[in-house]
Length: 152
Image 1: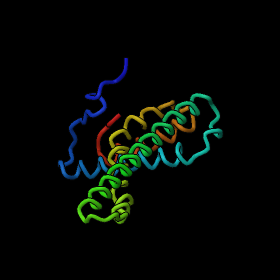
Image 2 (image 1 turned 60 degrees about the horizontal axis):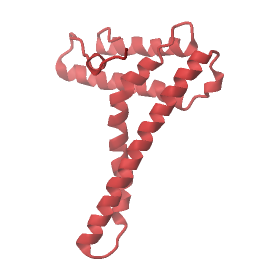
Image 3 (image 1 turned 45 degrees about the vertical axis):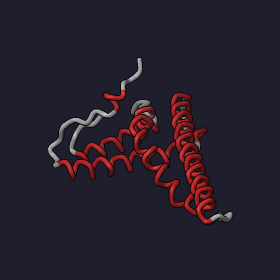
Image 4 (image 1 turned 60 degrees about the vertical axis):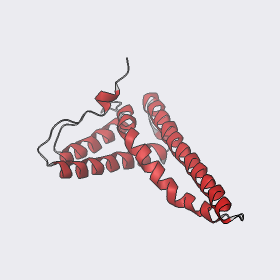
């Protein structure tokens, strides 16, 4: 049976004030995303020694790229709509609003990845005997130290 959303988004109480906890959680999310980018997205999956590491890293890489492509598609849709509306308002064809694509897309990619970062990070929990799992646990310990709680 899969894990429910409540379990994914469960946040235990900590000793930090709320504003500091939000900042710590954001920093932890960025650490986890950096780990995923470095070890899974940019890394060579063929260098992992076991098939289990390769399989889970491949799944996380596909999911990461899916979220990026979906955000890029939404960015294209929003800027195309802005171009059409702008052209109708000035009653002349203009492609100036297409430049908004480079402004809009990063705001679509980051929240989508931040939301699913924990799930992708959990997928890489392959055990400490593997290189990927040991590095994941090192990042997890760093996140727990920053947020002052045992999150996982």
